[in-house]
Amino acid sequence: MNFLTGAGAALVLHEGGHLTFDVIFDAQPRLEGVQFGPFPFFAVTHRSGLSPRREFTISSAGFWVQEGTDEWLLNPDRCGSGLRACEGAWFSKGMLAFNVLNSVGYALVAFAKAGPSERDTRGMADSIDVDERAIGALVLTPALLDAYRYVNPTARWAAWTSRLVKAGSVLLVLKQTSSSRR
Image (cartoon, rainbow, N blue to C red; front, side, top):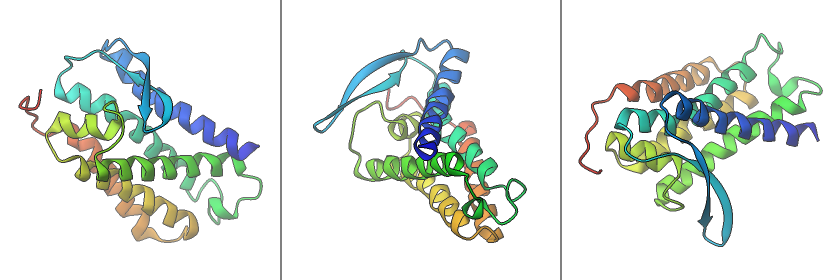
């Protein structure tokens, strides 16, 4: 049960990242029903007409929260031999599992350019005028590295590579944007 509660908490944190910037940018967030094939679910969306940088920030914020949370979860100071060896850390393991699997899912959808138009990877790609598959790779890489870090907590190369990719994703907010797709 703690594992599922941790996964649920990670979902709330992911959506909370989006909502935080929705509020900061007065983007008027709202829930909207969407379809992904035969599966109905919801998306947190916001008004249109935001600047590309604000759109990129809001679309990215859920991943930024996930990535920051993963850094905290995988910090060797939390559990000397790594999260995997921590007895009874099912809540934390559930959070990490959600974050990794959520990123993998988003990346696969980005590679296929499928799913609802409200998907985070599409918002990121459109706002900085890049192919959505590049954003898929940007989301997938740290997720796979963090999964590797879970299994191999002493792999410093994986930790630093993951951190560099995560920092790069935040720095994309500075990328010169265009409004050619709007």
